Image (cartoon, rainbow, N blue to C red; front, side, top):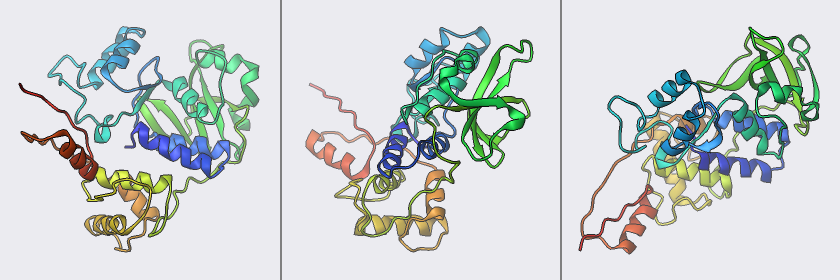
Length: 306
């Protein structure tokens, strides 16, 4: 699962590449798969404090679910920190959303803003949409928002997500999910400013000599997986050290050992389990500690004893 920081890096790379808004929205939604659903959240950092704020605004049932899913807030065997939580990968935060919060956060990456605080008011605000209609007329060549009509009140919309083509949707329900277009979808609408045809998300091939945000992203993942990139770390330059780390990762993963990061290696990196360790070193100066963190990644906590 990507952290919010990793998604930020990817989005900036897509902007630098001058991808269309539709491409960036689909790529971003794909990159956020697995992020958690919390009612009332609109892209806040996932942490107990932010979750408490959202829990205070929702129903008792929603609050119970939110508490149960958070290892710090749960009633049985709560933990004292977010360490080890699936929504805190590599000690970096993910974001939390509800369904309309997810759509707003992703579209906000390309400067699209919506009028309306919920699905129904978003749907009714004509200024939000370039075009809209019944789901039976859903365009197959454009990225759209898709809505569910409330089963008890046909004037209300109860859910929203993205249609991304090929009969698939991405939406936040329980978590951010990619699924076949639901039979419950009743309407579609194309946000104003969401230009461009439905894209096929592709990460670039990286090799010795590559530079830029995608290299930084690849290096960050390798460091999180405990591969040695010292003394440079995740500097955005694909050199000898990065190539050696990629080859080691490919060999470990049973892939062709080429040192080139192509589609298969990207998939393996994105799905690899990040193992976290806590190491305590006594009588260590801050300068040396900084060098260790730069070389091996992670975070540092200094406890001074007089």
